[in-house]
Amino acid sequence: MAERYDLAVVGAGPGGAATAYYASKAGLRTVLLDRQDFPRDKPCGDGLMPHAASEVALIGLADWLDEPHHGKFTSFSMYTETAYLRQGVPPTLHGPHGYVAAREETDAKILERATDAGAELHTNTRAAELIRSSSGAVTGVEAVKEGETLRFDAPVVVAADGVGGFAGNGMKAHQNAVARRQYFRGLEGLDMDSLHVFITADMNSDGAGYGWIFCFGDGRANIGAGVSTKALQRTGRNLKDYYDRFLEEPQLKAWLKNAEPEGPAKSWSLKMGMWGAKRYAQGLMMVGDAGSMIHPISGEGVGYAMESGRLAATWAHEAHERRDFSASLLSGYERQLRRKRARVHLSGQAMVNLVPNLSMMEPLFKACEKDEKARRTLIEGFTGDSPIYSLLKHPQALGRALQIAVKERRNGGG
Ligand SMILES: Cc1cc2nc3c(=O)[nH]c(=O)nc-3n(C[C@H](O)[C@H](O)[C@H](O)COP(=O)(O)OP(=O)(O)OC[C@H]3O[C@@H](n4cnc5c(N)ncnc54)[C@H](O)[C@@H]3O)c2cc1C
Image 1 (spheres, rainbow, N blue to C red):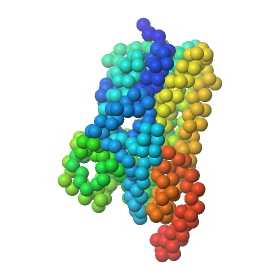
Image 2 (image 1 turned 120 degrees about the vertical axis):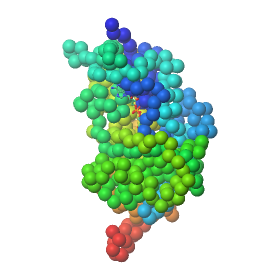
Image 3 (image 1 turned 90 degrees about the vertical axis):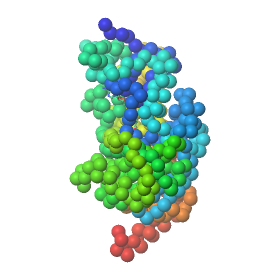
Image 4 (image 1 turned 90 degrees about the horizontal axis):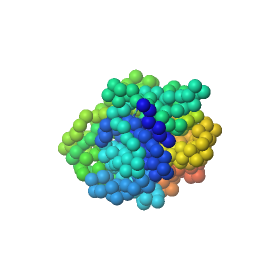
């Protein structure tokens, strides 16, 4: 026997759980399915940029964020081949800081908010396919739990299944980067209040990628590296090889001298950049990674998953109010998301596609080192707080970058 709901959400990560939270708050009878049980790990850098922290705070977890075992950062430190850039975090409504919180805990907390708001959760339940009427309209989800097939009837479905691809090829977003991370305890010598980002020669001479160290408040650190799949194709190398070489960088070796790993290194893929992904159809919306909402430069996606979930819940509610579940009505979700995020995501994606390797950016990094305003804009381009083309507002830094590039070429360096 099928149960009837107003909304079925597939995937209970930050995107799906936020959708279910807002939909339940708005009075929709919501079912939330996940193939895993919670708490569960999700390979991630665990960094919550200020805008992501605002989303977490918005669902009532501001006090939890401030618990001391989480990391709380107030600045970014960016290490490139030729430059060192340090910049304060741009202020947001939630304050001029971000957090580092382990996804195993964060996702369980967000999910708890969704169930407290009234969402009905089914874990260990894998959504197998969309159910459609004879006219092709979405009418629910078929799922499998412990070998039993279950039906969840609903006129609107939100797919928030990350890289799962449950909604089918027509809706599938592209996977364009991979990343790996491991936890360590006992790093010494680094500033724990900063997010450390390394644009290394090894990762960038044949593509784009970066390494990171994000510190918790309990003495642990998340160390990771992400590279574009194009870089892997171009070099024939694998992610583990990039990651292992990152750990051999002299600065890391020094900080890691007396550190111990905690648990295995884990890898996952990323669907980045809004371009090319289809995020709505009749009776269906795609949220978070399933909708390719990861920022194309930073690889950050928790805040965007929650934000897209918040907007999708609003449009699911609107569809019920109007008794209209058409693609035309749900296109409002896409329009609202684009109005908010397209400038930042699309320009970031254009930059990543136009610049074949990040080593080409070194003159600009060097020029930003001594230009505070340009440096802030560059870092904000990385964090998604400004579109990367805002750098055009700094002609002096761009001119200086050009001078550095010409000088290097004359000296046979470029
Ligand atoms: C190594 C790495 C580091 C990263 N670092 C950061 C960072 O520091 N900060 C940041 O903001 N972002 C980071 N990201 C990106 C971030 O992890 C994702 O953007 C985020 O997890 C997106 O959330 P989501 O809810 O869309 O998907 P997910 O968190 O992937 O959740 C999807 C859920 O769907 C479930 N599911 C899948 N298929 C099915 C199915 N058929 N039926 C039922 N359930 C299903 C899964 O079990 C899972 O629980 C990183 C990513 C990687 C890989």
